[in-house]
Image (tube, rainbow, N blue to C red; front, side, top):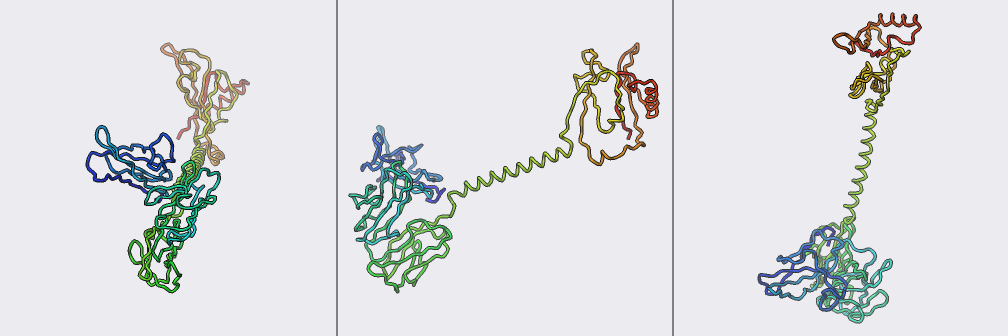
Length: 435
């Protein structure tokens, strides 16, 4: 299977009729206490939602954990009558365990009878309890020796091949991990097709050879077929596809001296297909974080330049005289009315007590040019004084307005009196620009 493929399993009952319910299982290493196949090569575990009236079960999409054998059986009636378990069907995902692989010599899918054939389980790391498995027309077999060959180390050797040795071969670890699988065809004929055992990567070259049993026949012409269609004729025993694409995947065979070889499947893998999705996700996350960081930095600079990052300070203004010139802070401070809960400019709070007056002062960042701009005397600022005046009818603050000339006279008068205040105590001044 290619990564991401959907696979549909179908369970059939001989002389089928209605009323059957189908159960689905996956093979595991033989374990006491679990149902097992007749030869006890595997036990079976139910798949989730395994019992259904449908005679099909879909793995969508199939992934690395779906590699393995699948079994079904059917039942009906009350009490339920069950059929035997089916022979397992094996699936291999394109993403396999990297610590184990199977190697074959000679390195081709098709072989002649009465020849020597070796299969080796290449183990990496601590892979214990491994075994070589094969799936043939007679069912699942394991162990190599003494059933169908002799074993030396991790290599199984079949000294004289037979057509019954045709099948799928793979290695399994003690924990049930699968290696890749090789599909071997042993032919009793005189012509075989030499094609790669392992998948071909898209973009690579592919060479197919048409080989005779007894002699090389170097000058013999050969025809090559893909999925039963002639794609190359009068070739000298070989055909090469310089750049393989996914469309080149399929069944191939050759014909020489009017003798046809068996068919073999050639698999084409797209490079990086098993990791491309993960790489795209990681790259996307990195780009998103970088863009978000840049956006936050620009937003902070924009707010800072617009004066949004201002400090708000509240301090008490005691009802006493001050020696500060009101023009000193003109244009740099802005006196605002106190918020609810603060006392007014006369020092009278909401509950009637008269202790402290609070003002809210907001410090705004000014443009450099605005700071260096000299004051325009033509703006004619007017100053107002809030005084508390009590009358018979009511009491409260009265707004008294002074011109700039009057204020200068008052300053001169205060200087003559050597007073530290501009006006009477309990007075607050704020610039009122006329525009």
